Amino acid sequence: MTKIPLDEVRELINGVFEEEVLKLGIRFRLPAPVASRNTSDILWSKLKSVHPWIKHPCEILATARSVIVFALPLSAEAVESNVGGKEPSIQWLKEYLVGNKIIEKAGTRVAEELRKWGFKSIAIRPTHNFDEKTLTASWSHRHAGYVCGLGTFGLNNMLITVKGCAVRLGSVLTEAIVEETPRPTSEYCLEKRGMTCSLCVRKCPIDALSSWEDNGKFRCHSRLGEIARKYIGLLHEYADACGKCCVGLPCSLSIP
Image 1 (tube, rainbow, N blue to C red):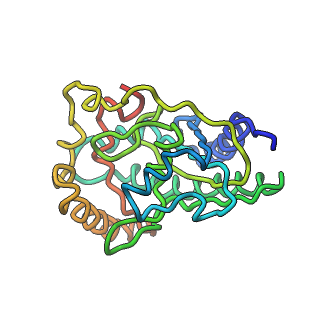
Image 2: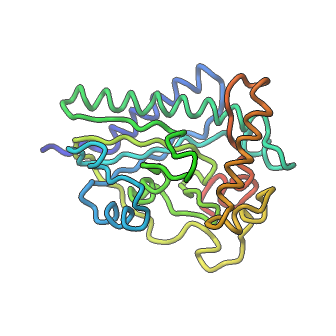
């Protein structure tokens, strides 16, 4: 089977993003990073052994041969606007909402194009695909991005990409064999690299990251719901976002 060059997929995704930039005027930090990994990679099984609720790609699309993960980098203006205070900025919330729609559109376009080439393909929605009680999801764009080589994890549980951790992620599963991306050879997170930072942990307004596995993630989810309900009248959509642990950091906009 012919291997599809990753550059073709990258060009398609960034083409969709560029169209939206022209239409909406939001200065997303393009080009968007894109990565791919074969579904036979052992890390998919290792991921499932650690997080059994996350499905192997072939449990979602039985004939999948590749996973494509891409990041939409939020604008520098949105990141800067969200640095101060304990409440998320309106611009951050708006880009969260718009970004989800654009990612869904890009994923759908890629899947449609791959299907035209004769490969079954599906795009996975960018968010709100988790169990409300356990806060576990059958798919994690962040973990898939790690397996595909898009980046490494920070202490904030976010994926640090070449465009930093202030990004939104999307995934496409396909029968096509897509050119693989080399994985990072070192940690991008300063703290995990052996340096002193942990700024993301300290920036959380409710200190959720210091006790994430105990009850931190539930307190974070509860706060996001409060934010969404507070601003729904202004935004007319459910913006359950905060982003304080992703802004004002050495890794917000790039690899530190």
